[in-house]
Image 1 (tube, one colour):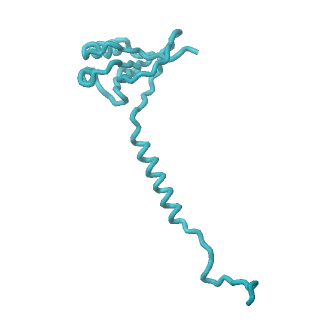
Image 2 (cartoon, one colour; image 1 turned 180 degrees about the vertical axis):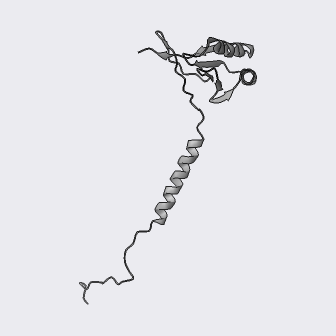
Image 3 (cartoon, rainbow, N blue to C red; image 1 turned 30 degrees about the vertical axis):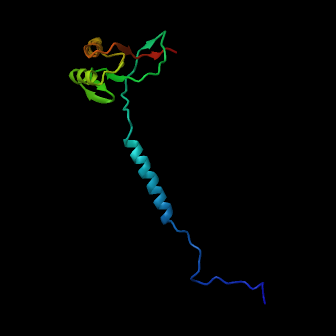
Length: 133
């Protein structure tokens, strides 16, 4: 019995790398990332907040309304108008409304949002600012 006999690899028995499972895993990862990218709950609008000397950081759950420099209104990241804001607040009845107005926006647009919140019965209207550094 010859235990040291070597087996020779024939021409048909070559090693290869199967890339099909790798492609399957990568497609699954890309699909997962794609679904996550389109499920973002908040859309951020580029609003430059004014600075304040005595700013506080608070963690609350509230309705966020953004006012851009041109006076466009966004509620929870979606374009809206004063009528829709007021009816949404009446239905949802949040305890807080956060107004994020651009520092160069007209004061009247902020007042419109505050007035709509008061008409809807919201007692706490917060004007967002950024901390001065």
